[in-house]
Length: 112
Image (cartoon, rainbow, N blue to C red; front, top):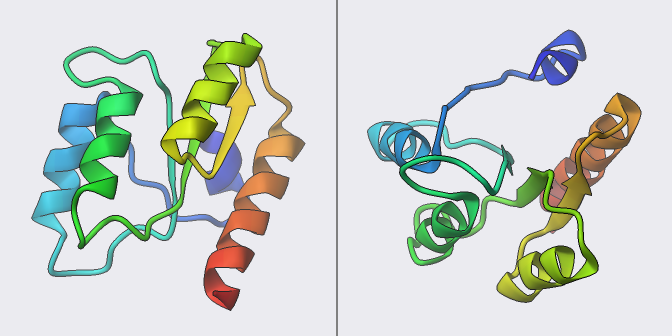
């Protein structure tokens, strides 16, 4: 996420949900991410499965998750919100919108 890195956010990338869960488990004793931005349509483990992994694991269930997806119908967005995703951005997206949402979610987490 070049946009986030260009705005001084530390970014760790994973190519799919399975890789993301492995990285989370590898660092579970260290500093966990403050926020996760995830696509939904990914090979091996999709974003919904990643979300369920996070929410079912006490070490990770407080990490806010934003879906960033090409799935853009109202039903897609409603389903993600029903699951409990913290927010949803559809592709293509404006970089400013992503930055604003990341800033907002990190602020909400800090103040909770």
